[in-house]
Image (cartoon, rainbow, N blue to C red):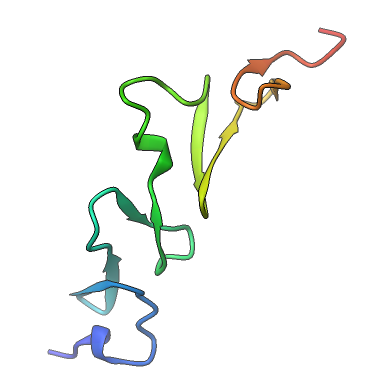
Length: 89
């Protein structure tokens, strides 16, 4: 069987798991997840909230932190964590 982890297409910065016809990147350090690029490990700030939600709606990990995202029809409040209706509603 061909091991895609051993090729130049392997973009993983830490672990690599060979799958049928491809590969999946993994992170070796607890609290880190594979980022949106599919290869780079980043700190999972969204899960490190000690049981409290960091964001009113959706938390999205970013390099070095997180950002809050609101559902369609809402906008992020000045606190960058709450979601509010836009002015005029």
